Amino acid sequence: METLSAIKPLINWLPNANSPLLIAGPCSAETEEQVLETAKQLAEFTTAQIFRAGVWKPRTRPNSFEGMGEEALKWIVKAGKQTGMLTMVEIANAHHAEKALEAGIDILWIGARTTVNPFYVQEIADALIGTNIPVMVKNPVNPDLQLWLGAFERLHKVGINKLVAIHRGFSSSTETVYRNNPDWAIPIELMRIAPKLPIICDPSHIGGKRDLLHQISQKALDLGMNGLMIETHPNPDQALSDAQQQITPCRLKELMDGLVLRKKASNDSEFNNKLVEMRAEIDAIDRMIMETIARRMKVIEEIGKYKKLNSITILQLERWTQILQNTRNYADIIGLDREFIISVYNQIHLESIKLQTEVMNE
Image 1 (tube, rainbow, N blue to C red):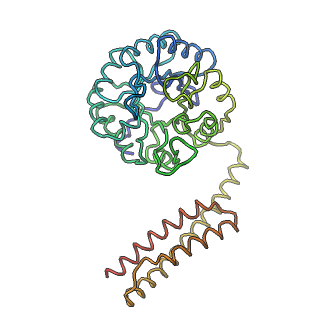
Image 2 (cartoon, rainbow, N blue to C red):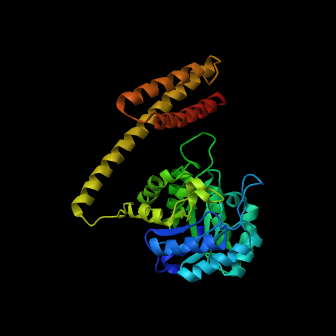
């Protein structure tokens, strides 16, 4: 993407970065002892290179633990010096940014509740002019790629080119197994349009539960993401915030050891030739799908003209219900996922309504 063309890859400002990059630490910095012990265990058991901890916590309810504030910055910096890890905290406004810089924090991150507000992001960007400190930006709470991109653009515009995206999932009106729905299509699209922008995954906030961390982490790495940010605590069950999604540093080591690291490409000519062959088959099938949809739309256009001629409404709920039922049944017969097929047909139906509306208005 042209506006983000000067982003520096991780290797430029983190030359010894592991692959995958591992960021770890407690959801909240609770006490100096807890911060130092977490960092010590992470350095001993894991390959974590960046130590993260929440200092100012944007809680949903006012009586929840909201972090220890500025005092905790000293603990985090001390932990970094003792272990050699870089340090990282969340900032939500210009004041937080200034205090983190004064304390000597190495990396800043902007949380999902802040990314959603361009005014806050601009305020932070203005406070960082002239620093070029690395900044990681979590996706906004709602699934809006443009808001996410806008945050990067505001930071980039003031000279911040050490930028990283953090995929932490999105709020959803429907109940799922996740705390925040991953909606992988959005980070995939971000990777497509901003290929220079490193992206890491936050399985802790996507899953919200320890038993989901492995599968989410593996999916993120399988999609080619650059790293993981996982919340760790010496005694997770006693954590003052987000206890259910935190794990011990020792458990984090087990999780990382259990992940499969796949290559992005192969030098095997037999594999590459077979892949080219199968992709050509996919291309041919895709053309057939588009041609079939085009024929369907032609019939839809004729139906629209016929309805207009006979003064019949566009939306026919009984017919749409019948199509959905037939689609579900046939999806079961041929072994396709119901939800996937229904989502495809919903898009086709919306386009059909749009086409018939245009016909009605001619």
